[in-house]
Amino acid sequence: MSSSNSSNNSNQLISVGIDIGTTTTHLIVSKLSFANVSLVNAAPNLAISGREILHESAIYATPLTDDGEIEASLVAQIIAEAYSAAGLEKSTIQTGALIITGQSARARNAEAVSASLAALAGDFVIESAGPHLESILAARGSLAVEYSAQSDKTVLNIDIGGGTSNFALICRGKIVDSACLNIGGRMVQFDFQSETGTNRTNRTIKAISESGQLLGQNQIKKGQSADLDVLKTLAQQGAALILQVAQGAEILLSQVMLTENLSHDLIGHDLSGIDEIWLSGGVASAFTEENLFRYDDLGVLLARALEELLRAQQITFQISPRAIRATVIGAGLHTLQLSGSTIGFEQNSRAMLPLRNVKIIKLPLLSSDSATDLSFEATIGRQLKQREHDWSKEAVCLVLSGITRDMLSFKFLDHLAQKLSDSFLSYKGREPLVIVSDADLAMALRLLLQGRLTDKRIITVDGINAEEGDYIDIGTPVSSSSDPNTQSLPVVVKTLVFYKSPV
Image 1 (cartoon, rainbow, N blue to C red):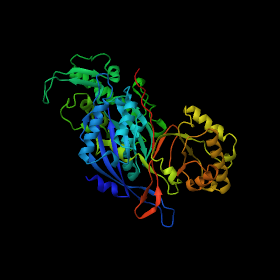
Image 2: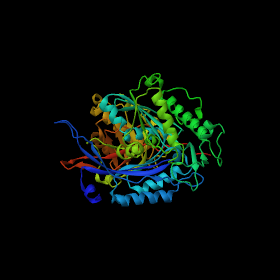
Image 3: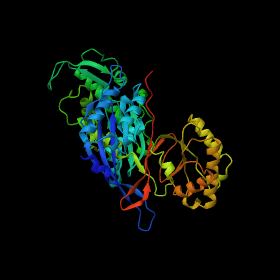
Image 4: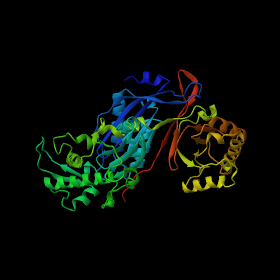
């Protein structure tokens, strides 16, 4: 692939997805195309219109130390080699995501490694981890979301990797619930020493996860040889737990849940609310593997046990066409939003782009009179306190929600601008002042704010959805070659929430 040809097209962005998982590390390079999707005579609105995978790296074993920490230097080498094989340089990457998933996200150094590697991977590559985000990305990358939207079906995507099983419930193309179970193919790992081939018998236990110990009830121990029947029983127990979560059933071993379970109200009983189950992840890709110990772990046995259980209960399921790549595809293709065309910024603000890791302060639902509410400033103060954030030292992104079209009068926007500027000055806010809304108000609001904050740099963005607790990245403007005057800001809304690190 020629990186220069791809990067010169003003209607395209080059995106990378990097997944550092419990068992494997790999990346995918994609080309995202965007175009004006507005109706005739409507205001221009740029949106992602096409996605093409340009390069898939080899699948590497995740480099970990004996203590379970991530070998950052070796992962960096993997990224560098993959970029070289794809014909890319760091400067070519314009967006994407680097995620640390499964048990790797619980490593003590996960957050520090993520931040350092994201800087290596590209200026606008973001770092994220967390059980709910992993579930969402896997569902999108597996094509289950797209299938649900096209078929109008309710689909449950289960992504089973080395460390965790991630669930995403999808109704008509919308992810409505997610959950994560601490069960995966690497519950038990083996050391076959010098044995090769498909008939290896010296199953010395190399490592056992916490979940493996709970399910195994001390029948398997590190350093000992494991009986095949015991391992099959362990795999069957793991498969049963996966299906219990899929059914929204109460989990007796609550220690193996990393999140709340799926909602009974959404799925019904006995999966009655689900049309199909989709399976992705490394274990799903092992359904057709004949060698029980192909990966020196419990993955193939777990796949067989789950398949037997699904068929026995006559549950409709299918394996994702890109099973093992689902999470990394989701990371590379589905992290980006494009702002509405009425963004507000000037050249002095453009010099501050891209912005990375800006904390979101989401303001409560606004009414037509709330812009004049004297508690407006206090509300921002409470949010800053909750997020332990000093606005004078680091910029924040104020997210306005609940503004409807019929509220967008000059009087309302003028009062809103007054309260926002008063709050910014009161807290001695760090520039730029960043305002995000899902309503079409960015340009008008920036003009009103600029009249009050004449010497301050202001960036207003509309057409973006974000939630409290998220972070936001804002890139440099993009425009369509058919209409270079119509500009949008590429925005990534992300969750920098890591699993609890072991003590």
